[in-house]
Length: 391
Ligand SMILES: NC(=O)c1ccc[n+]([C@@H]2O[C@H](COP(=O)([O-])OP(=O)(O)OC[C@H]3O[C@@H](n4cnc5c(N)ncnc54)[C@H](O)[C@@H]3O)[C@@H](O)[C@H]2O)c1
Ligand SMILES: O=P(O)(O)OC[C@@H](O)[C@@H](O)[C@H](O)[C@H](O)CO
Image (cartoon, rainbow, N blue to C red; front, side, top):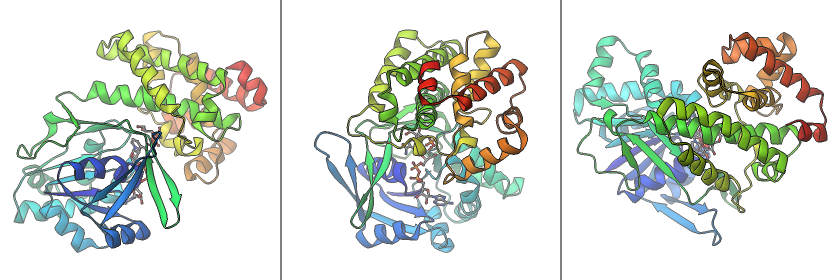
């Protein structure tokens, strides 16, 4: 069985490639990074290191790789794959859509075997977004042809995955915990053997929203507050009792969104929160606030981890004062190496913070705009001690 995976980054190698290979797939990665592609091809295997007491190293073999520019080879791989997956970052799905469209068109002509395409990105319904991006490259007739053979089941993935520099490059560093939840109802290839340890569900939405609006929201709140007080990692940020308390308070607020939306049980959500906070505090983990806070414009999006629960809870009449403060901290994320941070800071300088919220978060609720703007100014004018005292 052949798996074609776009994005040989931390989660691509550290979770998706790992589980696919353990399920008996030969995995072929497609990436724009020539160095990574060259090394994978040369060694036909790679290592990942676990963030456990033993620093366990696992080897994933039967690996090949293609550079994105090898168009004909990538198209052929799409025609003959048994599953196609991605983890390129949701903002890059539009870039892989054209080649997927070409490959799936050829497959619909030549090899009519059904195939599922799963985009594994931190976003609501990323596979559906990928499908929408493909629709932009095709006529309705061409897309209809593709849909006779291809499904786009959505998924939710969870594993903290970063990387470690080694003498000959870098390897993914991953926590022992992982979760890959796949929307069974969206799958069309019923012959495909189950992926080992993946969880198949009919209705993904509760799992997806719980992951993004709790795990990733809490992570983002930690990163942005941590960054503001000069901490380099999520772990050193959470070592401040005030930040830990603040993050718990934001999670407590966001929890009510999931209770309301999906009738989730408060005690179960409490356990879920405690479990991932412990994962964030893994003593072997040094996860940079700049990695977790990356792409602040994406993270401030309308349906994203910070703004969606805040909007929803505000309309339901629940308190959101910690969430609005976390949004304000995100607006202060000033890390010029990150292109989105650069654009965001420049935009705020030229247009003001309220306008930035309208522009990037599509927020229209006046009381929310006012309280986030006020929080932003309080945080901006405060020093480190004052920030720790006010949260
Ligand atoms: N790292 C984590 O802890 C984690 C956990 C869960 C989900 N995610 C999600 O997984 C996705 C990937 O995250 P990551 O941390 O692995 O990022 P990463 O930067 O380590 O990996 C992304 C990879 O995609 C490649 N890429 C970018 N554009 C491409 C293109 N057009 N064609 C082919 N390859 C391309 C990059 O070169 C890189 O190797 C994101 O959506 C992220 O939100 C990450
Ligand atoms: O990948 P992002 O940029 O959407 O979010 C950063 C982190 O919160 C994220 O990568 C987590 O480590 C991961 O989602 C844990 O499963």
